[in-house]
Amino acid sequence: MIRVVLFTTSSCSRCDDVREKLNDLQQEIPHQLVDIDISEDPLLQREYGSSVPVIQVGPYTLEGSFTDRHLHVTLAAARDRERHKGTRKPTKRSRLIRLNKLARSLSRHWLALFNSLLFLYVSVPFLAAVFMNAGMVGPANLIYRIYSPLCHQLAYRSWFVFGEQSHYPLASEGMPLTSYEEISGLDEDDVFGAKAFIGNDEVGYKVAFCQRDVAIYGSMFLAGVVYAFSRDKIKPLPLLLWLLIGIVPMALDGGTQLLSSLPWFTLPLRESTPLLRTITGALFGIANVWMAYPYLQESMVEINLMATTNLLTAVSSTPDKAE
Picture 1 (cartoon, rainbow, N blue to C red):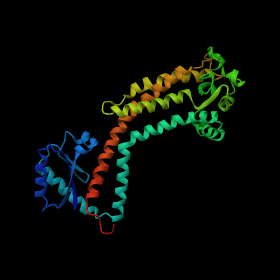
Picture 2 (picture 1 turned 60 degrees about the horizontal axis):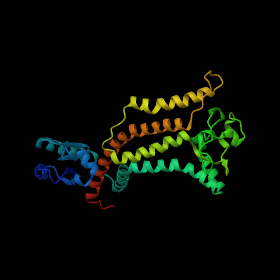
Picture 3 (picture 1 turned 90 degrees about the horizontal axis):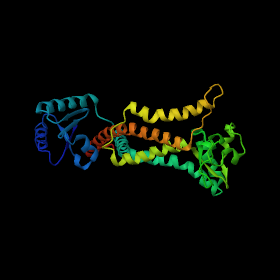
Picture 4 (picture 1 turned 120 degrees about the vertical axis):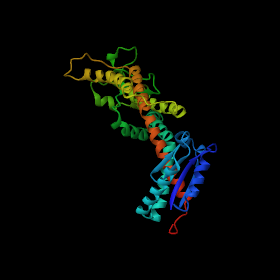
């Protein structure tokens, strides 16, 4: 027997007519009607609020002002398709219920999951400095090692906590601060030394993420929190604006800094500043969220609709005896 899903609301005047027509078709095309009030689910309401009544029968969907003949043809097509498909094995039914529950949960809470993961990702590097300050060298070194492949961790481009300064720039920056060379005793060209230098009780301890990475992932987390409260009002950032806002500033700042340090380029030596790294990194992170999250939201709405429909029809049907 085929299952017919009717999406409706309490204010839908035409839904009663559709139910009556479905009842008339019951003898000719036996079916199980599953009535879903979309007002109980915000995602369903946003998707179908202006289209009820909506009929879903297998892969077929009818919306709005469909005729009785449309309804009859759709149910007949679904019946014929079901006959050709055959009866689903009982073990598959219970597995599909579990999978649809998981899909519906992920589609509804994906943003909270993303924000939580981003918060952990950007906060754990600070724990490395906290652990070092507390004398917990083992856990601190573990965090530094885990994040080492993900970030250059150069001391003169990283934040320090529990020390006299928040950062220690290269002497070439000409800033009125104690330089990295002064606190480390290492040459600025010693990249491996700068990566390995963690700090001490006097100067503080290095965060396991560089300044730019802290800005990128921190801004993505904050932008995700903002998006959680205004997702219905935010449209995707166009690709050209994403390039102009997110890519170009960071490419200019980081790119010129990199090229100037290479021996075969004739550019004058240039070292960016914590402020520029933070601004360009934050622009990149915000632009990524602004462009990607609206598209993800659209996809998650579709997944939720599909999973909700599949789950409600499966749960409302009579379980097979073998289950």
